[in-house]
Image 1 (tube, helix red, strand yellow):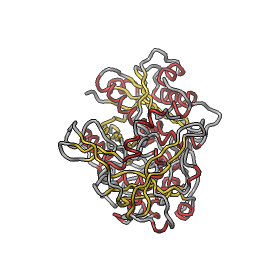
Image 2 (cartoon, chains in turn yellow, blue; image 1 turned 45 degrees about the vertical axis):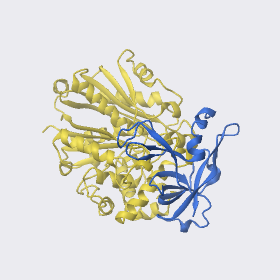
Image 3 (tube, each protein chain N blue to C red; image 1 turned 90 degrees about the horizontal axis):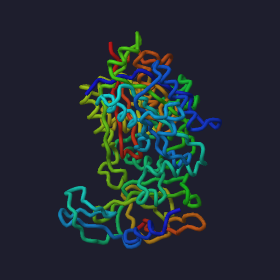
Image 4 (cartoon, one colour; image 1 turned 120 degrees about the vertical axis):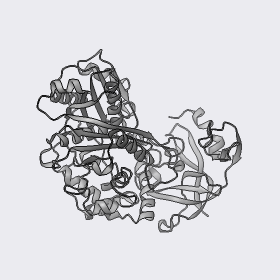
Length: 387
Length: 131
């Protein structure tokens, strides 16, 4: 396998982008990444997008977007693993370059979620659960994570205050990210006093509905060395992808995320790293309980210690392992297909030392983790900057 | 809108709680599958699920999805039946939400679940009720 580097990143402001269509926000992010890399051609385009068919009524997305970018003719494919689609897009791009099939790949993620009303958005997201045996009975995604949260609380003593601490931290981080959907300072009391969505999860435990796109350009090391000049080169040293049952009914332990653990083990093994080596991480906090469970599954904390760690500030700036410096899904926003790519944008920016006020000093090794549905799929990547 | 066929083929499971018991290892699969995830077996006999079970975990959904808007607050639970099979169902007829608890005994009853709009099918299946 060839070594693969990230040579450009692109992100545009996320939010309720009423004035822009899916193709517009995607093209803007793609151009930002191409401009950052300083390339005007690519050999392949991957697009992580969960459900353009349900959100905007558009399938056949890869060709549409390649054409929109002025690159009709270039090979392009949309890939999907629900909310982990963006992470999968990087994995597929990595395979293209590592195998030698392509030298330069544009890896993108996009979701346009506000072109349908909230009920339809909720329905579209719900299709990441088992339609016949979960969604049929009326369960929602907050409901599925609420069921996991209840057991995590019962088994480990995790508290609503610890869940709230995740939300407070990620909103504080987003204050420093101009591209984040929300710039809103929250307190633990604000979270606990907010509307209950699915007991024990409040509205401020949940990530929002977001329009957004993100992109990175990856290339073989040979190409990277040729065109990056004096800028630090960020390598993709580890990649892990894993699946699990998508129905909670078939999962033996609902207080852990086996797909995340497996994907992480594969990524750590490939990179020759252990959890303690990681300096900065972007993880899938679709709900506050999810960040607690993922920081355990990734090995940053022992099972049951994710909640206390969040409350003690171990995942904040200056903590043991800063998590979601971008604001995370909670506050930066969660355009589902774009999320996994935006995580890579944030970590690569951190490793380049270009994160401004959000910069984690001395960050040289970073991790991204995204997952689909209630943990039925997971993607983990490890990125390292060449010293 | 769902076609009648999609609903009809699930009637044995939804209406009669039919599951598939692997003749190789005895694992009971609900819903039935083509291959047993435990032993790889491909031969099954049809068994009927017991109706009694306990709540493994639950939530009260205040913001229900399309088709369930009139039913808030909606109680959803993962129920483990007496034979160990787990299934996600609504919990109905809860007199007091504070009585909901992990480990609470329930039994499955045949109920109306939802409607597919004004002209679509009416879906039936099972809900749990306090035992």
